Length: 156
Image (cartoon, rainbow, N blue to C red):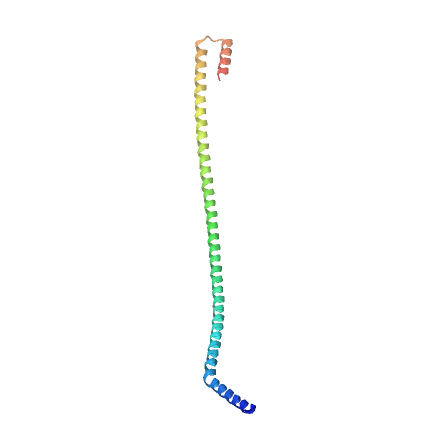
């Protein structure tokens, strides 16, 4: 056989191989490649969609966190105002109670002072009566009177 015949037979076999490959083998391979490309594209679009959903979820979370922080700050401010109000009310009540106690103590002190004055008057009156009795019992003389008055003065 000659080289030309061998070359022609090889070309024919190659063409048959290419034809069979193009008809039976290439379409499933192309379909598999197209399917793989479609799946990759779907995966990329799903990833983009998930990324955008994550971004929107993060925005919602940040908004809710901001609202929660504002709510907490408002509640804290309200609690502080309430605490200050309670402290002021307690101070007012304490000062009112202190004023009442001071007024009561002053009234008691005045009563005690009045009682002491009354008791002192009674004692002075008793001493005066006693002195007058002693003067009347003794004879009337200026020296005795002076002595009695001096004694009375020392007793007072």
